[in-house]
Image 1 (cartoon, rainbow, N blue to C red):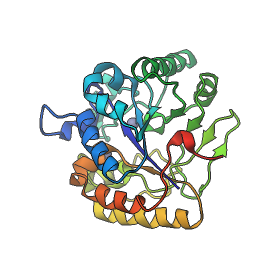
Image 2 (cartoon, rainbow, N blue to C red):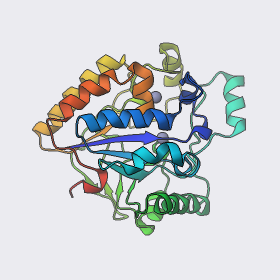
Image 3 (cartoon, rainbow, N blue to C red):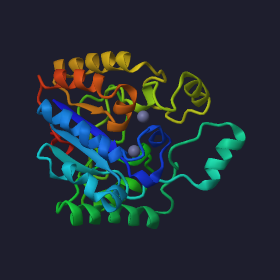
Length: 277
Ligand SMILES: [Zn+2]
Ligand SMILES: [Zn+2]
């Protein structure tokens, strides 16, 4: 089974990558709507982890995704861990990679408030109880899962581990399904992630549990995804794939996504909330 996932962020977050959207009338949400059409063409299910501010600020544009029968909406933090102005200036002065998010949720109370706001906006806009969650930037701390469990979240997918083919229950009671297929953003040369940027980033790499530190042209990345998914299918595992609509668009205008979706369509796809345990 395949759990196809993607993360969507609000325009006002001003991620590094959003600067590469050429048309000023276009946006990450509008790109995600076009990506959804491709997912629908192949009759796949998809879980989109969306920041709360996307639903708050870009609701009109987001409506086609909210209305889609094949989509589950998951939480991706309300605020999206915005960078501080200081960190942006610091990156410029020191020449260190300009990070796309903060690495801290702040205090217990701050994080709890952010999670509650995310749950409330989903209830308000979509009319559903939020049950699936992935932290933006996969940033979690010792409080995250406790707060999520108490707030009614059931499934999380923050772990990068190519060897975990089956979901597991963590001590807080949540079901964790690892991203066990090479994820797109950190492994594809695209947007600001040029060869030079990646080499520089490696010096400051923070994903110590990342199975590989390599980046590839998207075609090669697509070949690796195909190989890994088929291998997990062969072992009857759950392949959790992370493909960001924006990364896929900026890399090759969904060409590789289309190729992969055709392969995925031969297998059963499930939402995060359906991950069996
Ligand atoms: Zn994110
Ligand atoms: Zn990207």
